[in-house]
Image (cartoon, rainbow, N blue to C red; front, side):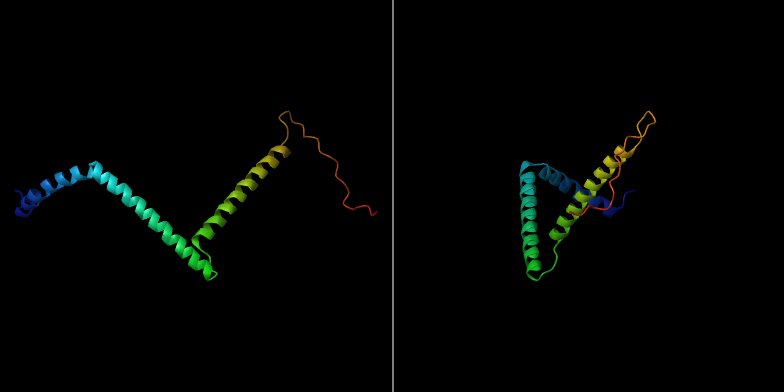
Length: 113
């Protein structure tokens, strides 16, 4: 036996759900959602820019500064990793078991002119 509150809820919810689903699937809703997301992004960008200028005015570090530095460090880490990989490949023995030829080391003392 279904409780009375459930019957009342179903009587109200079903028609509302059908209308809501139709509205959400309409092109008008999608256009409004798209515009609201664009407006929200624009406002967030403007607020972040104003906050960054205000922080720089006081000589403080902003989120943008930290992100730029993080990206630079990540780029340097990639470069170091690539250079390390190249150095390991260069120093690795050849497949036939022979070591690659190495140049003789120069003396560490310099001639004076």
